[in-house]
Image (cartoon, rainbow, N blue to C red):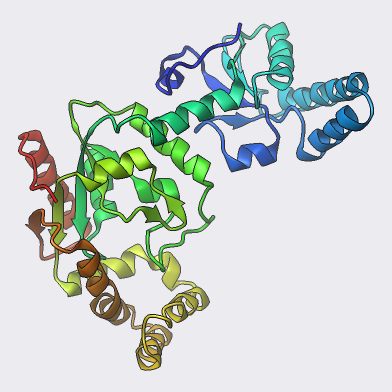
Length: 353
């Protein structure tokens, strides 16, 4: 019997061991339920073939050929990705609309003896819940912004807060981007739909009685747009601002961006991308520092001439409570997280921006 999702929280409450997405690999790559496994009922090519036959020739022939393909693909999965599942395994299966693909796979798995159900409405029903959470329903918690100039270890502080049990929402992690021209990460950014799905699932788990710490970002992280309901909460949120010396921030950035510094060509390309904003002499200076491997000097120069002025202009008189630190070593980051945790646990609201 199909399962009707009434909220994204149902995905944590329902008694299933795993979620199987039986759509094609291309559909899965664009977006899927976070944590779902892809067991394609039809490959990308097979889906195109069946669709063409369905439209141009015969619905019956398309279904017969499609059924044979699905059976072979499920058989391969039983010998492969599902080979170690025991008799008590219970999967929840979905396809695009909760129709033939999920029904076919669920039937085969059910005949083996596994208790299997499908999602009513399939991926479209899930996506509707995500869109509602991101675009219509007010954000479910009290946001506190973690603010500070570039290089103040905000991402690491968020992670340290999460380890301490503080509620956090990691926008840069969900977007796979560090939020600047130098912020690209291996693997590139996901789709906007995936970004919203990860955030909506996290929002569904929020305890509204406790604050949620979010890094102060612009309305976009890389090329991805922060969902409107979250952005509205961020604009009205109080903030805690980390303040550290330029030298400490430069040292931190050389550690945090070690992956970029190992790729000299990519680093030079990103420096060159700043040409529309800075004169040729400045770009030449930064390029020389990069080529010489003077990375702390490069980080300090970029912050002093590029990031700090723009941050100040963008932030204006946003205010917020300031937390000073002389160091941004891992030990110092953990100490900052402890101070923030104590501040939040005391129930004292930071100054509103």
